[in-house]
Length: 358
View (cartoon, rainbow, N blue to C red):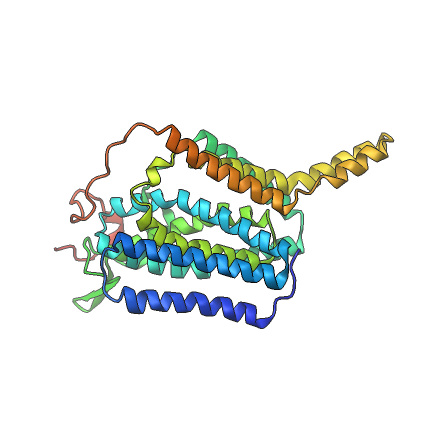
């Protein structure tokens, strides 16, 4: 593993910044549920990007340029994947017709849960790599498969009622067919029930787990340093919550972004399996007597981090530029999701004996 020993202040400083920002966000600016204004959202978006870049500068200063480039590359990959998934969150809120003033609360606690889930996933992933390094080749092959699949497939529809995990959880927590302000749980007739907002939160967390299946292997293709992997992930996730409201009206315009991300995932996958290909090629060349060519293959079997960073930036930038130069046909606007939940939605498997009167 290309990991160094980080001093205690690095972890403590990072945690302090994140939790202080979360406390200010929830305790000061969003104490009451409301639909964030464009100015407010823009301010928080700039704040999170600035904090990530300042943190990146500290890494460059304290731990060297290689670690600095690793953080920046990982942050850009995670942020790009997150932006591509903004439309998925929009579909979730539309599916459940979640009022805009409650969306921030659902995303806030969804992000909070994601911090814990990503920490577990990253430590499991890096431990697997540490114990059995060839697992990187498996991750690489998976990313190549995912990238090719992204090139060929359209976005999947959101159908929470068919998700086995959602169905399992809601069997233990009866869900009422309505929102109760910004509450996740309510008590009625001496029993505890989940509101629709809780169901939205569950679905968001399930989707984040699905996102992690792509994003964690992608950044492990850049570095297996736990500190770099986790901190870049967290800053990208925190930015996603504010970017959702900032880019809500323009994210559909970036229709080529998924192809740029598909290329990035495929590139990172190839980068991860390249040493295996190089070792195999070098062995065959050595067996045939071409030792000088075998040494050349060994020399180029690792792609430098600055090259990876360049590929990521150019791919994402090019996909955004092409989206603006060649706009797609305007699609029908998704319906008004500030209204009450539709009566024809099937909650029969969720509610058990939950009361659904409005």
